[in-house]
Image (cartoon, helix red, strand yellow):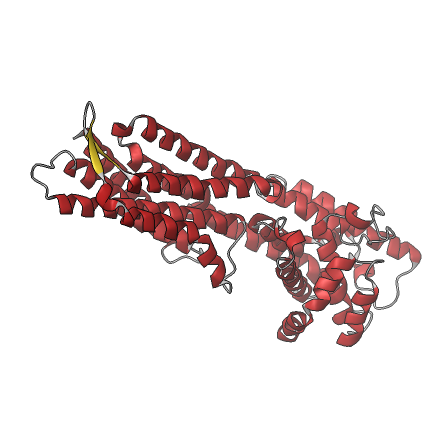
Length: 430
C-alpha cells in the first residue's frame, strides 16, 4: 500500500503543476512548448499505471495474468514515452529542431522504436519476484525501459557537454542536474528493485523542467524584457531620423545568416538555441551607443569631417559600456556578453583596419562578424539622411568585394548564398 500512496502523491504534485501551467498560459502571448505540453499529459498516465502495476503484482491471486501484463505494457510504454519526450524536449531547447526537417525527428526516434519493440516483443517473459515488503516485476521488457533511459539521457548528457560553451549556464546546470538525478534514481531502482521509486523520476523531471524553463511567470518577464530592448533600440534609432526599420532589417539579415550557417558542420556545433537566440536579441542593440552621439552629427545631411567621424566612431565603444552598465543585472550573463561584443566590435574588419580595437580575423567574435555583414548591407541598401539607397546589385557587390578585407570570407559566402532570402526580406520591409 505504501508504493501506491507514493504514486498518488506524485499524481497530486503533477496535477498542481498542470493547474499552474494552464492558468499561467491562458490568454497570454507566451509561446508554449508542444513537447512539454505532451509531457504534462503523458507523465500522469505513466505514474498512474505505475501505481496500478504496484497493486496488481501484489494481488495476482485475483488479477488475471493477461490483465496484469496489459497494465505492465501500458506502464512500460508510457514511461518510455516520457523518456523519449524528455529527450526530444531537451534537444529542442538546447539546439533546436527545424520545423522543415521532419526526417530529423525520425532519426531522433530510432532508439525509441527499438526500445518499444523490445518492450512489446518480450512482454510475455515478464516474471515477478517476492521482496521483503512487496512483489516486483522483472524481465527483458523492464530492462529495455531502463536501457532506453540510459541511451536517451546519455545522448543528451554528451550533447550538452559538447555544447556547454554556448549554452546559458542556467540551462546547462539545470539539464545536468536533471540527468544526474535521473541516473541516481535509476541506480536506486536497480540496486533496490522493490523500492518502486520509478514514479518519482518523471515527477521530479516535470517539476524541474517547469521551474527552470516553462514557468509562465518567468517567460512573461523574458517577453517583457525582449520587448523593452526593442523599444529602447527603436528610440535610439529614431534620433537619426530612422523609424526602427534598420533594427528590424538588420535583425532579419542576422537571422538569415544564422539559418544558413546551420547548414555547415563547422558552425552547427556552435549555434546552440541559446547562442542563436542571444545573437538575435542582441542585434537590435548594436547601435545603442549612438545615444551618446550628438544630433548634429547623426542628422548631418553631408559628409562628416574627420573630427566628426572620430566622434561618430565612439558609438561602438560607448555602446558596449552602456550595455554593461544598463543591462548587466537584467538578463543572463551570456546574453550581456554577446550584446556587449556585438555593440563594441561590429565595426571591426577582417583585415584589422576597423575600430575600436583593430581586431582582425577570428579575434573578432563570431557574432560581431555576422552583425558586421548585416549592418553594412542595410546601411548601403537603405536611404540615409546624407544619400539615397544604392541599387541592390551594387549592395551585394560591396559585400562580396569586402570578403577577406572587411568581412569574414566564409560568412560572406554564406550571405551571398542566401541572396534570395535577403531579397525577400528586403522587399517585405521596404
